[in-house]
Image 1 (cartoon, rainbow over the protein chains, first blue to last red):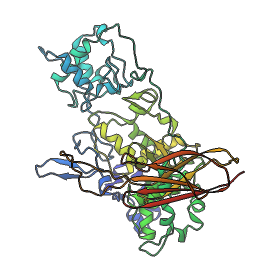
Image 2 (cartoon, one colour):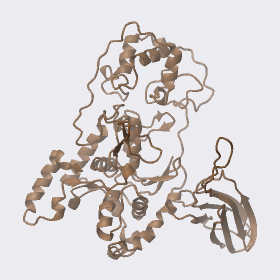
Image 3 (cartoon, chains in turn yellow, red):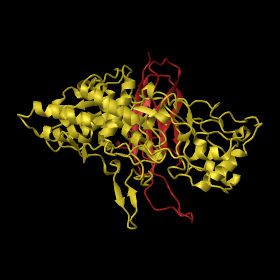
Image 4 (tube, each protein chain N blue to C red):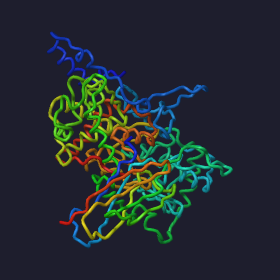
Amino acid sequence: MRRLSALPSLALGALVLGCAVMARQTPEDAGMLTWTSRALPEARGDFRVLPDGRREAIRYKGWPTRDFSAFRTYDYDDPRPEPVVERVTMPAGLKGDPTKGRALFLDRAKGPCSGCHLVPGADVWPAGNVGPDLSTLGDRGLPDPYLYQLVWDPRVVFPDTAMPPWGRNGVFTSEEIAHLLAYLQTLRGPLPPETDPDRSPFTRKKPVGFGDNLDPTNNPAVLLAEDAQALWEQKGPAGRACADCHPGGPERAMRSVATRYPKHVRIYGRVMSLEDFLEAHGPETTGRPYPAESADNLTMTMRIKMASNGLAVALDTSSPEARAAIARGRATFYRKVGARNHSCADCHTSDKGAKKFLGGRLLADVSDGLTRHFPTWRTDRGEVWDLRKRFQWCMTPLGTNMLAADAVEYAELELYLTTFDRGKPLNVPGIRH
Amino acid sequence: MADIGKVRIRIPSSIKPGEVVQVRTLVIHPMERIERDREGRIIPKTYNYINKVIVTYLGKTIVTFDTTQSVSENPFFSFAFKATDPGPLRVEFLDTTGGRYEGAVDITFA
């Protein structure tokens, strides 16, 4: 159960509206301030307690289940501020081992540091370039205590950095940082010539796309979306079908509908994406459940969005509800969360990581508009993902607990992201790695 | 998600008589594979993958593909043939459980 009253502006809006309709109290009015997740169990961000007392996250099959409740989340009800900057002095007598340091630098269970920083070695694969190239860091003669502070909590020196406070948040111990420094101080020029242009993120070719995303022989999601035709016409347990109220088939009845989502839906008192709306509206009218992240929800969402393919995204950005929600979505985008103390902006704005490599992955730039091809076929997963599942997957490396797929926080973040797609044509389903 | 066996075939929008035509085809199929234990014995479970593809044109088989368990989920096949006469091009996918999935397009000349 989520109480939206924690949001001063929305609560105020609801209050004003509440006065206006006081005379006829409807169930919709009564339900305005609460939202219970209707997502599939694995998409809710819930936990189970193991026999040994540990808490384990309930996740999609194959996803990590570690509990990160010690760290800040995107939950509007999470009052914790960003962890305070921690100034440290390097413990005296700490002696590092360069070999151990190199192994830690590349350890995927830790950073890996090489996800953002290039260092020499053919086994450094794949290295990223979100942070500076450290290939000859030893030549700069930087003192160990300074580097120790930079790894422990770099915000002391660079307040606006995208680099996590590794020591401060307990990812690396003092000894481990000493090993890392010992390794970094061995990095000296001149460097041998690069033999493989793909090794270095500075010369690596940018990945190309996967061809025509609307070609059913190229994108299996197009075929999966065809299942919606039968769903559309099938009567649900309540005796009605989508087609009964929306005549003309999804292509005609739903033309241009998707261009207006996510939007603030008055009767539910919250911002909703098409997936969120379907989850509530589908069962209320047909009796058929459409939980977030279920095959039926994704299939129907794809079909409805496909009816707007080629039409420009035309969000409401001017109503008071929309403006307040976009402001909250923007705040979420810049909010630092999790063990890594990252924000979305750290990776996806052009003054930080956008269009640079994080490991082998090229980071997308929010200003290009990242939402209009969702739900999208993910070639490496062989699954259709909507934007919410993509958000939830982002939470995993950030070291923060994910929220329910239909959480209002995600809906308002999605709304903020969609403002960058305004005027650009929808193109669903996409195809991405 | 979707039903097994949906077939899609794509050919160029205009074809001239005698032209060599590139065909793209895909079938929705789960590809459940054979796995072995440490001793090399097959773990008894239902495996299911496409093991034969038959292409017929004007009633004659023009090509067959024999595939093994390394064929992917939702496999995609592309091949070329010479379009001599108008008529149906039929693609059949057979899997290890006896499933038979078929798609067809009409070759017409612009």
